[in-house]
Every structure is written in C-alpha cells, then in structure tokens.
Image (cartoon, rainbow, N blue to C red; front, side):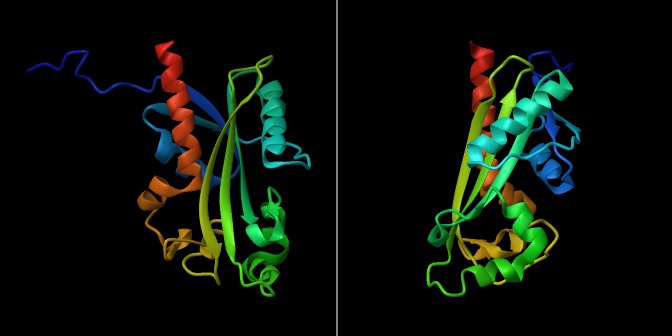
Length: 196
C-alpha cells in the first residue's frame, strides 16, 4: 500500500543556524530539536560582553544576526552557585579554563551549601532588524567532586538526582537538562508560530 502525503514522515518545518564552535553542544541541540527543527551550524568568533545571562545571550544573538544576515540561534550556558549569589554564572567557560573542576569545587569548600543551578539561555532571531527572543531552561542540582567522563565542560561536577550529567546516558540527560528545558520552549514557540 502506498504511503500518502498525510502519512509520510514530516520533514523539518523550520531551519535554524545554530552559532557554536562547541561540538558537544551541537550534538545535544541536534538530538533534541531534529527532525522537527533542522539544525545547521556555523562557528563565529563573537565578542562576549559582561552582563546578566540574558544580556550576554541577547548581545551574541544581535551580533550573529548582523554577521549572518539571516535567522540565527545562539546559546549561553551558566552554572550558578546559590551560596555565591549566582557566580560563576555566564562566566563559567572562563572559570573552567582557568581553575577546572577542582577549582570550582574549591570555591565552595568553605560552605555547606553546594546547591547550584544549571541555566541554559537561547536567543533566536529571524534576521536583522528583529529583536531576539529568549528561551531559558533551569535545572537545580549540586556541585560534587568530578564523576564520569570529563569531556563536556562542567558535566562531571553537576549532580542531578544522584548522578552527574557526565554519568548519565546522553538520551536520558537530553530529557531533563537545562538545555532540553530551554529548547522545549523554543519548539513550543515555533509550533505556535506555525499555527498563527
């Protein structure tokens, strides 16, 4: 029996140009969004301003949109230690490069409170002249000595429900992570746009 157009698997309805040089992030974003949203990739060397999670992401999105002259999706990930009022926050990439997992644990050595928030902030713009739209996801966890592979940023020290992100199966992580929660909001926004 022939497959009708209505029965055929739907192709991606939207395409986003995800601006990142981080291969691990690209793999996760594709795993979460595709096939509903096709993810293409371009690496740009964007200046990152100092500011709040949202300000940093919005600025990156505006810069990328001007360079690409088309639709872009950018992301900024933050690791916020509750006892340190949200630090290192959007500067986690630089903290990781300079002090690593051990240094991040040492920042909390004097405190009983090891709780933290993993925050993922995406910004999407359909092109120049359009104000970016923010989609944010948050996962509450705690900071622990490294466990699991140390191949993806701070995943080995962020524990959620007894496992570090690094110890989790990738499919399982992609169902509960801060990145998943933000992209779920992006998908809902795209679905709503199609219905309007």
